Length: 357
Image 1 (tube, rainbow, N blue to C red):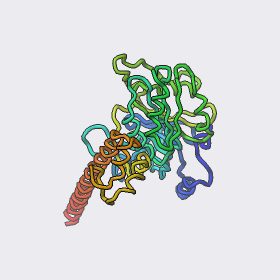
Image 2: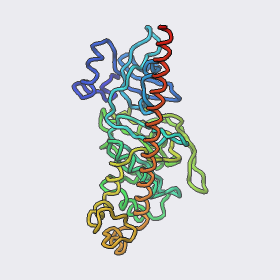
Image 3: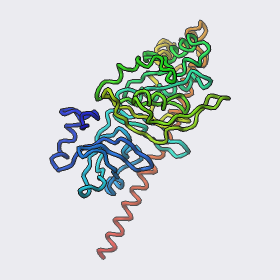
Image 4: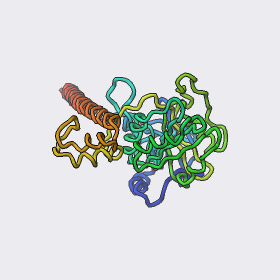
């Protein structure tokens, strides 16, 4: 294999961005796996272990700047057969980002430079429209194209009704119904798997991502586990993110199941996912209408006649509030980081002046 098999295109914007570094003797590679800060990168020398340089670690502003699976990175070899050093991450064409789990205000990039996001949802007891909306918001905001995959069709009691529900929230998004274990409907995914194109597989634990990965790879690479019978929830089967070259030439990024997906930056995603509500809101009497019973509210009028469900409006407003809260936390954290950098800079200057004296 060569770099073009991993999606590198001569003459692309990435190639132009890398050109000055190539003249300086560096080479380009793509991150194919990452686990707790340990990287595997594919370069012209093949696949090797890699680590970020101390200078890179010092200069990067936050966790979002560190390499992730799918990134194109600038590297150099350390010795004839040693690990390679990562000096820089080239500009990302797309990135799927969530708020990192826990209380820390920090973003976490799940995958970078993907063309299509396969959002996988189960049609079993874990089926959840509100979760699908949340995934769609983040997918639209990533810069990649979302595709919704409804798995476990063989376990759905009323398939037409379930599809109809999903169509009300997945506006302008392709929807494909499959059964990964039975092998039904999987040929629908072929158009998205063109040579050199990258697809990331996102979903909760237990929706069947590992089963689908194995099918696309044509072999048993990813382990699979059964879900709990009482609630159809699964345990993490995939333990780290991995980029797999597929037999047809496409590239698949498999990810561990997400137990939670908090928003990070969703301005574009909210507008795309809830375009129906935003279109209705344009006809409200008041420009700042909150759709809480104001006179002339077109959104409430649509709910009254059955064109829109109250639960969808509630979901939209909930995600709006979450996004506003995250933005406030991000602003606070940015101010603290700036203050911390200035304090460190002042300390360094004082130490330098003391040494001169």
